[in-house]
Length: 173
Image 1 (cartoon, rainbow, N blue to C red):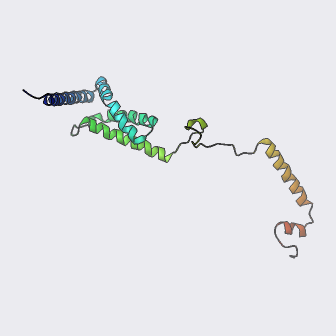
Image 2 (image 1 turned 135 degrees about the horizontal axis):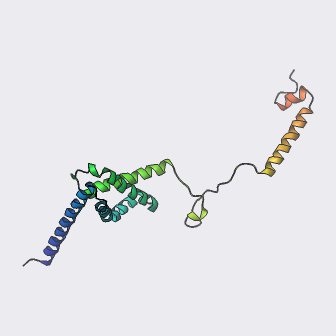
Image 3 (image 1 turned 90 degrees about the vertical axis):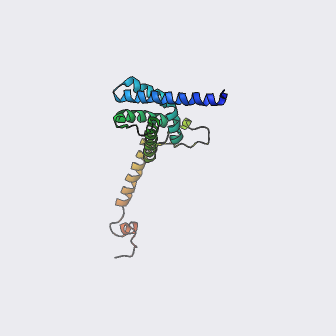
């Protein structure tokens, strides 16, 4: 009589073998053009792959983008899958590369939120974006000041006073 522990291990091994045979059949069918087979493969691996990608990106939206990109790339490259490695390993490699590409893009083009409520509490940092152009009132005042300065400059005597304004000493010839 065999022990219960040995039976559960044997059953687990049989389930793993049955799953791997099923995956191999699905991969073969997907390579032959079955969209349904690829959909099942996506269903089988999505959750585990998402968790792996999320551990890399640490951002839910980026992980979802990388997961979508992973299955897109896998679908396009399915014909090149030779079966030397397990399908799950091949798919995980594509997923990791997709996640790393998203991180590289994020690093190259950092994004910041202009929404002060996007943070979590008062300690969160955000940028207050302001228009640095003058408003109409400031523009009018500056224009008026400039006109007054020009009029005062024109009223100076031709040589001596203008040289002093430009930084020349008054006694220069």
